[in-house]
Image 1 (cartoon, rainbow, N blue to C red):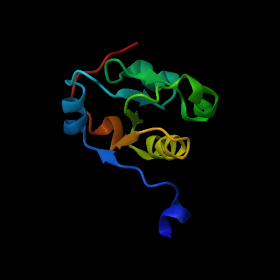
Image 2 (tube, rainbow, N blue to C red; image 1 turned 180 degrees about the vertical axis):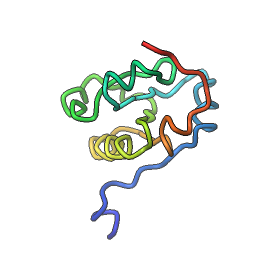
Image 3 (tube, rainbow, N blue to C red; image 1 turned 90 degrees about the vertical axis):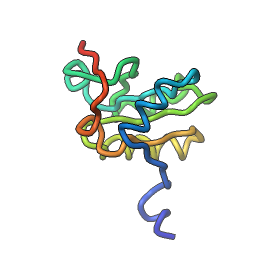
Length: 109
């Protein structure tokens, strides 16, 4: 019942777990929902930028054949994005703690 009050239940993944997933042959899509400026400052290599406010317009462009991991600065916006994706039928996890916890490599630009 509380899940209905707070939104769809979303599995989470730690930064270490995400780093391991990115080494697999079938990597998840890392979906960064921050602003373009935040993304340019540094992001997970290979991440795709879709700011949270634009996510609804880009759902048809996202893959349904493999996992998506949502990422933002601290995890809050990514959780909102992940809930939206779960409701739309995607397989998604949220990076717990966002980029604040990411210790892996980053790409700028």
